[in-house]
Amino acid sequence: MDVPGTRPIGYIWRSSTWFIISTVSIALFIELFLYGFLVPMLPYLFQDRLHKDPSQTQRLTAGILTLHGLVSAVSGPLIGHFADKMPNRRKPLLFSLAGCVVGTLLVAWSPSLVVLLLGRVLQGIAGSAVWIVGLATAADTVNENHMGKMMGLIMSFASAGIISGPMVSGILLDSVGYWLTWCVPLGILVIDIIARLLMIENPHHSSPVSDDADETTTLLPEHIEPHDASTTFGFWIFLLRDSRVLTALAVTILTTAILTSFHATLPLHTEEAFGWKPRQVGITFFLLSVPALFLSTPAGWLRDRIGVRLPITISLALHAIFHVLVGVAGNDRFPWASSQHRGPVLYISSIICLGILRPFVTGVGPVEVTASVRDYEKATPGIFGPRGGLSRVYAMTDVAATGGMTIGPAVSGFLREKVGYTSMNWAFGVVYIILAIFAAWFLRSK
Image 1: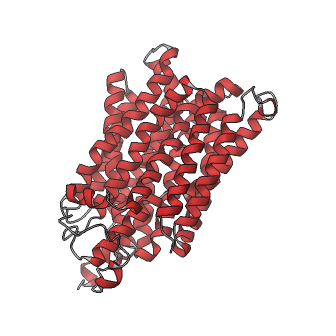
Image 2: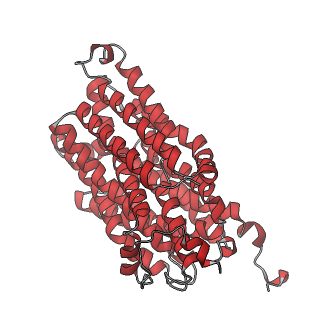
């Protein structure tokens, strides 16, 4: 039992749920902020600083964005494996934030393409660790009945980061110049490192293992037999045989891929179709991100109340409609939506609607996979090892998300060049319809 006089100064607020969740939220915000922050700067970086031919910009942009996701996907399982074996998560999260600082400095400096690639590799590894360790820390802090609200709050920051990054850099690059623009992410990273040094982990809110295994067992898929899932390999094989987990991961991979496709295609498309400059592009990304700031927490609350199935099914189906409209806007084959008429208005309106729908999709993977793992742990205590499997859960969902970040820019860049922006978005609409069908079939109501 703790003696009050032996506790660190500020123990109550430093170990409070709100401070821990805030620290994790800022960490995830800045990680995705950094991912998108570079996007509007890439044409300037490639052409003015690295002196590459403008015809290579699309290919180099897709390659840089793909590299970040690929590195994160490869490093994620290893990070999750070791994080679940550590007695606390203080040092891993701190080191990962420091890695983000070093990687960001390398990217900003980048006198050559090799240094730029090295910085992105370091950002990818450090960013993956931020996600895995940060989400595991947050999940240890809250009760499982509030997972939806917690994930909604964190995802509101994460979504704001991935979309507002391009907005901030696009506006500042025109206004204050290259180096002052980089002061923004570096300043946020320093603030979060300080918060992480102050934070004291308080995992007593994590859900206890239930002694009543019979009741929970009836909720588990009958075709999955208990076996040694305590190893990392066994853990992955065990969960990937669950259709609920597979569906949640598929939603994470594909929706993330389509979201990040905006970073590889939106700046170039809007410049060609509407003549927009970095400032207008930044504002467009801002409009895509703002709804998440207000709707992610209510969306999480809705999941806690009625489950995942209905909200995500409706949201995925509506995503399909608005991606079709995004593809049509600015296409002169549709006179009513051409760039000279209603095209810009239709494009912006559809972007805003996608921003409104996004919070009902974001975070579904971590919520559903965490719920599945906790169900298994209640049915068979210790099945994933003495320290549980939360870090490996978030390694799995991080691999899914970063896998989406890897294929999104590459596939969208390829499709835009080969079939055009309109057909690309129509293909995305078909993907969303298929995901809606699988979500309605395999994901669960409350």
